[in-house]
Image (cartoon, rainbow, N blue to C red; front, side):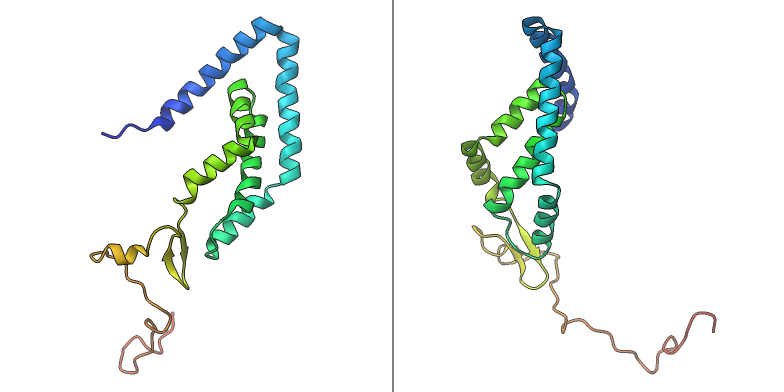
Length: 168
């Protein structure tokens, strides 16, 4: 049975954030702890307004058009993710957001996920930059790729259903 880390992460993150609040609150006091949380929220909102949600829309539209999302799209998208993490109250999410904002970390993330990007386009089929077309590797695939001229319907004059409309 495959163990997924996401449910454990979702359950343990709030507990870790609460523990972080307790540790930081004991160290610097309640007022400064709340000031840090509010400051990270304000910084997150400012970053989000600066980048905007438009970058996520642009990334989605370029993916639908078959364009490989590149670094120029990933950098602002990572800013949006970092700003959302800054908005979430807690010090662990703030630390993750700060790491995301560091350029060498972004480059590492880009190298890690760039080879996993797969763009599907109706015009050019399935493609990924580092790998050949998947259709070439899986000859027993159940996917049928038809062009517009391969599939079309012409009405059959002898069919009892041709020329009929609802209610006739």
